[in-house]
Image (cartoon, rainbow over the protein chains, first blue to last red):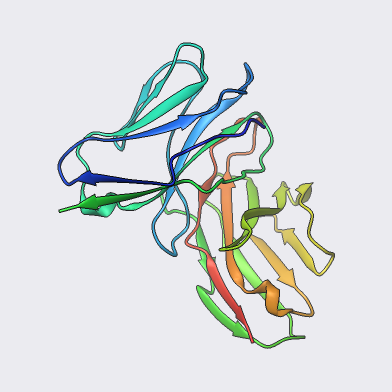
Length: 109
Length: 114
């Protein structure tokens, strides 16, 4: 599975859009980009995933570049409850998930 | 639909003891995966069960074992506990019908070994 690179930490003001980048330059054609987040000491929460096209659900939007080498998770109106560690992972078909260090997102009031 | 549930949520054991953790997947999900999460090692895959059969296995010693029942509920057992087994144990379920399936995690069981 391809490796991902994320900034270790980010800050965002409450009510603003939080844009979390992820680099996955070695992604292969059949690998999906998944985003999870983990609030302190809780189980990881699935957010969104995509293959090529941009995706949106009730939680977030996922923008994948045309060459698929990077993506951005967008939380449109961040709240204090969005403070968490966000993990971007790239997986093909195996059920085994591997989380990197992720991005620690802090939403400030 | 109810989410993935895990019991117990917290557990304290002493070295040498054994422990059994339980996971109930989302209704209709047939695949259950187990992970160990520690601050030092991050998230590590233990094993995955599908239709009562172990389908994938991580690099953990034989002290770690699991099983899945006909209703898709799963248990994992750790025998001869060591201090280093202190961790958050996470269970994740998915439909399991094809390779690319989203996994949904439970709240985890936090195990402390003294």
